[in-house]
Image 1 (cartoon, rainbow, N blue to C red):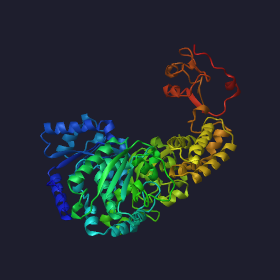
Image 2: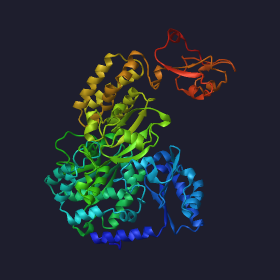
Image 3: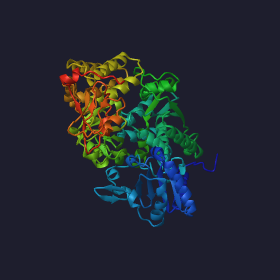
Image 4: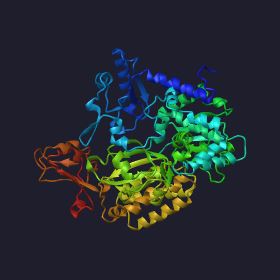
Length: 635
């Protein structure tokens, strides 16, 4: 045992008070996002702060805290200065001197680094629209603590729920509270968490297992990664409570290898939790034993499906199996096993601390509590977002996300990852929860939300996501292995102008068969992007087939590039940019693009000076003259 060992609930409260006193020694804290922002130089910013604070003899009164995601990725690297709550974006190491002088010494904001909305400078984080429209609950500690210091987490109340559950509640009472809170799994399916735990607890056998599914593989999704990187102790606490409820002594965090920072932080957090007696033998003197092991996955998307994940944990190829029996009955090595994802476990401490009634006061009948979204795509404020269940797409995209760049028009949002659906603008005011999105052909999924504007081709979007799912299929069942591939062939033909209108009926039939007959959730939901785009954007499919036209100018085989002779000045900028020498013309004379050589890359369009705008693109059937034009030799 170490002197840090916490042996009871009372000891935990004392540890929290000590940690808070340590924090209070500093009059100011510079919080620096060191996860996603690291790619844009956050480590150099932190080093500059530490060096310059020492030089200014301020290092004993100002703490530099390397945190998880603060949220507003669009302005990375992000720095938050407490207690002033000034949020700075696009920070560079060269800005550190000014921040120290203006803010840390004098308490004033650095105007050049704060956000601006509608012409108004918004220095404080709670003034920024991105944060004002959110409801931080699960993410309350992300960006506010050093995830590598358990003392920071304890000072913010972490492990209070664990102590309450283990020391004052019976396992059945914990399950009852989670059931009354109506927590539904945040991994995609939305199955009631309390019911799932109940099944596992009632399954016969003394040896049971708990698994945290951290194999987040959706393109554009980073919710679970942010939680593991920014607040790993909350996840560990939720897992320990769940293990106590179902009677498991051993647990796993199954995390993909592409998340090295998450793997590092969760490993450090587990070591610290054991050292403090919050994990391992006789936790908090309760007599309950539970420990967690980290297992790293190889990045197979199908391992997000629970039976495939279990197979991978057992050292087998990650492939799903038919159910029943369900994992709660027969899971890891044939023993009763419960699996939830990262965000689900992170919600559990909130329920135990607040109580089911208060927790469920947020949300709708179709989903209680909050939901975290990874907001990406054609939206001004990309980043990590937490809103109440029932928030509308309009609130997320425009109030939180700040709308479409350059005043563009919202077209659709891909919700639920590659197996989700494309939600069109007509549903902007629909409250989002598990039931409402299902009614319009989408799924909540784990929380990926990719915004699209009018420059997006919906046929190409459907093809992109189906291509991803098809390549990630494990190949075990024929409907998914063969059906998805045939669907992809049809979409390829449509995007390349080789399809007939009858192919749309064939595409719909295939989608129906694949969805109904596939073995696991990957194949069952694979047709969603195709079905929703066919349902809401069928005119775009028809334009591609009947007019050989891509209205969004995305499908390159349907594009042709031309030069307007009345606008061309013969500057040669387009010719110099062309990678295949498809543009000819003398200096100061009209240039011409040879359609037979042109690879439709668009380099000429970008190179033409905007004051001339001589290069233009066209989508549609070629004229008779264009069809007859023969390519000239590059030599």
